Image (cartoon, rainbow, N blue to C red; front, side, top):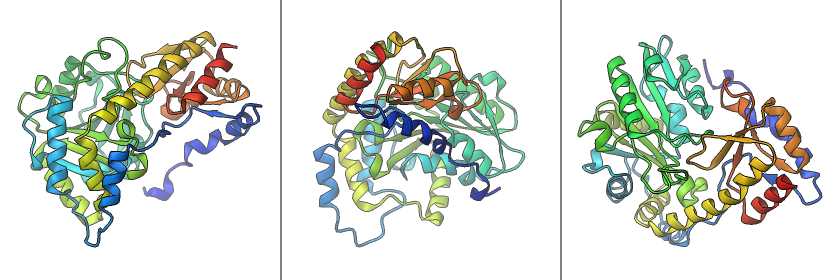
Length: 367
């Protein structure tokens, strides 16, 4: 199987509903895509501008400064001490890594790739790209023995599920039993909302309480798109098992998967500045506090959603019917059909809209 054999891009199916929403007298409120709308912090943009004399090829492995910043950030923000340059690797955003990890791990027909039941579709795309079998499962006991890669996602997209330390330990144990690489997508980790995650750190799979001092077979994946509004920079990284990191580095060198030098400099600065992250979190907290009761007032039940950038909601009807009803209010959301076959009655509301547009959506929903 190749890229040309993949299905049409699913978001194209939303276009007619977007057109309906645009006909609202006060315009569309687009809550369908989790693309940041707030400015890139000045301290990061200035770092990028200062590094634009980038006449040499950048390092696929990342500059020493960037790799040091990633390791220090894991210690400071994720509670993961002891990482060094051998444990970390920058990527060109996280989506390319999700899609290409099965290829970089040399998976193929006869191998299984496990992903959550409510899942970002690129996990399945990566499996299909190499002819592997995608398996949707949240229960480690059900992970098949032929699984060679297991994706977990906490906080989840689209459902906002946060995995506890105990759940992460169970995942690590089972992945090691079957000999699978465990990759934990943790891109929303700074955005925990409901207790206990409003006060406690969302745990990383690399936390000592999960893996002890043994990173074997385990990777954590992170992106600066959400916490730092760097979606356009394509700035992400992974950390964990040094043997896996070395293996991935070789493949990525051959494929030319190197973050641009100015982006590497911007990432280094972003990882060292916590103030802008706290400010962005406060923006999303305010928007969530406004939108969540309005969604519930409109007849939706919100499931999970204790972390992340989304509200995962259902009104007990097919998601496309809900998408249509909301489009008539000028609100565009994502249908649960896009996130696997298990949640056909759910829709995803994104918090990535301006204060004014979130306010407009709340007024329409409550009315």
